[in-house]
Amino acid sequence: MTTLALTAYVLIWPLIVAFVLYFLGRGFFKDWRQSRKDGRPII
Image (tube, rainbow, N blue to C red):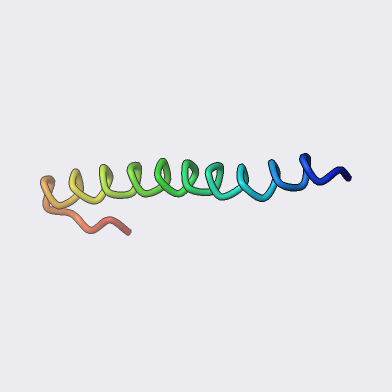
């Protein structure tokens, strides 16, 4: 693996992880707010 490819990999994967965590968190908090609004537990 070339140095450029390894550098790109190391710099890109945290961005991918951050996007995945953002979308998971956004969905969770949307469901959490809706369940609190409806007066029911999230589980």
